[in-house]
Amino acid sequence: METEVKEAQGKIISAENPDIVAPADWQPVIMGILCNWCSYAGSDLTGTSRIQYPPNIRIIRVPCSSRVDPWFIIKSLQTTADGVLISGCHPGDCHYISGNYFARRRFLVTKKLLNFVGYHENRVQFSWVSAAEGPKFAKVVAKVTEDIKKLGPLHRYKKENF
Amino acid sequence: MDHSKQIQDIASKLFAENKIDYFVGYRQNAIDDSQVPYLISDPAEIPRLVFTDRSVFNLANYLKPEHTRRKRVGLVVKGCDSRALNLMLTESQVKRENVYIIGICCEGVLNEKGEKAQNCIECVMPDAVVYDEMIGTPTGKREYIVNADIKELATIALEKRADYFEDIFSNCIRCNACRHSCPLCYCAKCCIDQETSTLYHGANTSSGAMHALMTWSLHLAGRCVDCRNCEKACPSHLPLHLLHKQNESVIYENFQQHLAGMEKDDRGAFYKYSLSDPDDFIL
Image 1 (spheres, chains in turn red, purple):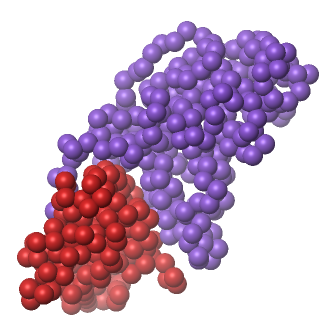
Image 2 (image 1 turned 60 degrees about the vertical axis):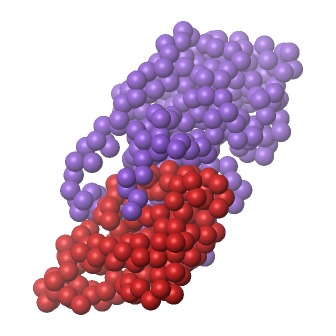
Image 3 (image 1 turned 90 degrees about the horizontal axis):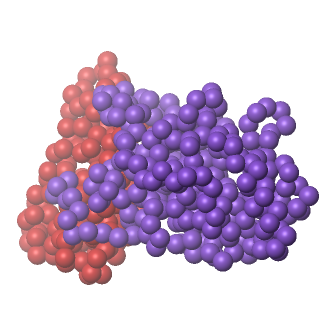
C-alpha cells in the first residue's frame, strides 16, 4: 500500500485521517470472506460465466457466515485490507438452517462498533449472495470497491509486522 | 444505605448452620474510606464485613477461581452483580445449589469522587434478580436510558472520534485486568491471546490494544451487565464502558429491547435471533 503525505501530489484522501493521501491510481485491497455454500459458489459462477469484476478482492472461504468472528474483521483491517466484504446465504437459505440469522445480529453490532471507534461505515460491508447470483456478486464487488476507493487508504491501527 | 448488620447476621447464621464454606463480602480498606472484597472461611472474621454505598465491586467475579468453584459460597450481590450471576448460572459456570445469594435492593453506589456513579444513575435493575434472601425494599425495573457519553460521542465528526479512541487505545498497557475482573470472562484460554505476535505488538501499541479491547467487548456484547468492574480494575483509567454501552444501546434498540441477565435461562442477545432483525445494512 503506497501512501504519501498530503504535501505530495495525490488525489485520494483517507476518510479517517485527512493527512493520508494516496496517488490517484491507488488500488484498495478488500478482504472477502464468503460462505462455502452460497457466496463462494456464487463467486465461482461469476468466474465461470466470464463476468468481469474488480480484482481488488481477496477471497477466503468459510463454512458459514456465522463462522466469522468479529476479530477476523478487526484483524483484516489491521493488516493489509482497506475494507472487508462478508457474504453469506440469503435469510432462510442457510445450509445450517439458522447460521446467517445469528451472523446478521453480530454483523450489525460489529459494524456499529467499528463506526463508533472511527472507521467509516463503508469499510465493512455485508451482502447476501446465493449460488445462482453470479451477476449480483460482480455488482456487489464493484460497488464495494468503488466505495472503498472513495474512502482512500486505511491508516489507523495498522500493524507493521505481522 | 448501610446493610452491614444484616449481612453479618446472615453470614453468622449460615456458618452456624454449616450451609457455606466461604463467604464473600466487603470490608473497610485500611488506608481510606473505600472498601475491598473480602473472602472469609472463618466465622471469627464476620464482624469485619460491611455493606454501604462504597461497596462498588462485583463479587460474582469471586466465583470464577478454582478455590471457590466447587465449594459452597455465600455472597452479597447488588442489582447489576446479580444479573452477571444470573448469566453465570445460565452458562453453567456456577451451580445454583452451591451459592447462597444475599440480594440487595441497591440505592446506587458512589464513584471515586464521592458522587453517585454513572452506571447507577442509568441503572435499569437496582434490585437483585436472583437471590435466596433479599435485603431492602424492591423498587422494580426502570426505564432504559442511552448512556450520556455515547450520545455525546455520536455527534462528533468521524475523524475527531477516531483520534479520541486512538488516544484511549494507546494508553492501554495490555495488563488484561479488565478481562480478569469481568465475571463473564471465564474462558480458560482466551481468544485474544491467540495472536502469536501478542508479546511484540501487545504492549503499548494502539493497534494491539484496539484488537484486544474491541474483540473483548464484542465477545461480551449482549452479555455485559454494566457493573463496570473492568473500569474499576483498569490501571490506566480507560473509559471501557464506552465500548460496552455502545453495543448495549445497539442491541437494545434493534433486538427486542434485550438486556443481559434479566431473565432466567436467557443466554444473551447473540444466542437467539428473530426473523424480523434489521437487515437494511446488508447489500
